[in-house]
Length: 449
Ligand code: NDP
Image (cartoon, rainbow, N blue to C red; front, side, top):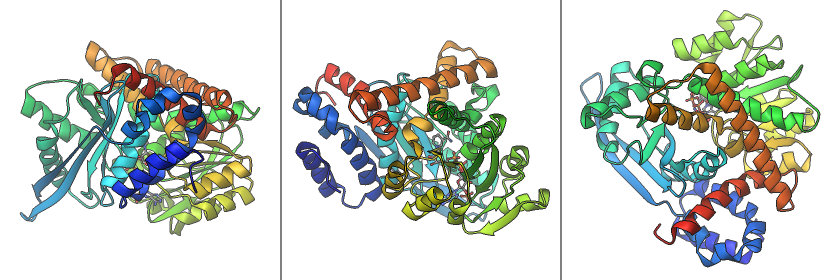
């Protein structure tokens, strides 16, 4: 598929040549550049200032060795990364991912998306992402701690409360953030809000844990309302059973829907009576167990091996909350055939380009990740505010602010789409609304970065 603008295509061709081995990064950039065609055509000053050439190149990438000792006394070595993509509107901000699949392509795609997502939140945060190919699965608490301490020993040179503020992502929850925060504090002798997603007694924000999943449902709710629909009485399928999936399950249930399936990378459980999010929470957060054990608690649930089959379950609303490219064209066709009315992305880039095209062609309401899952990072920015002011807000206060932010994101994405002649296309609208603010800040700051 060619980008329908010669200049944007030529920037993309150059990027492809320089980053031929980074498919996920190229996929993310191509989608954004295609959306920006009407903006570049309407605003020639952006081309003149080389905004596109600059925005696709990270400001800085740090790659480092992470040595640690396992429980058998053997030395292990992983690779650590921090991609500091864009600081035009604030300090770099974005999660840390610990997963064996982590590589530069995945972190650059995530960091690139993060620029626009963070801009959409309306809060002053730049884009970044980081992590390691370390696999936390099957590791003891002590091994996790030793890895996190070693990782932070190098990372601490590159971050700071006004420079770069990492958070959690796949494989990084409150436990890992705690080990990293403790090490940062020890190395720098400072108690600052350098990481978000902290535990409450260490300066964490109430409602941060819930924020991405709740925000996803608030966004989907706005999308549905705009068409006179709601969550009430709808059947919902959610992939994943991690942080985002658990709280999407809780909020969708509170909004009157019935969540009938959730998954992990091995398989999925289905229960047409509705998944109990408290049991899900107990299994995943307390026991750190596999999703198949859900059937031991709830006998009416059925477990099926293999995670992709989840998209063949008939539902009204699909919320992919696991990982990138988990929902392909074939899965999208199955969802459409079974009557899905709305899809909102909790994970980052979970739908392949073919799947998105299928939803759009068939009139399915589609909420793209950078808008729909921005509630997590927005609440992280609220955690930064509380840390700077040395205050803590109540759960309801934070939740109310989150709800307001998600409504604004929906409105801004939807209005940007209308302004540039692609009404109803939230993929384009989110890319455009996120981009324009960053581009204007870059224009204003001159060609320093
Ligand atoms: P977690 O590590 O808490 O959970 C990830 C879940 O997805 C696990 O249940 C995992 O299962 C499952 N999973 C992984 N691969 C697959 C697959 N191919 N099919 C089905 N399930 C799979 O991560 P989060 O919930 O934090 O993150 C999920 C997604 O949301 C990621 O894309 C992340 O970037 C994005 N996101 C997260 C935010 C946050 O605040 N946490 C904010 C914005 C976006 P298993 O245990 O088997 O690996």
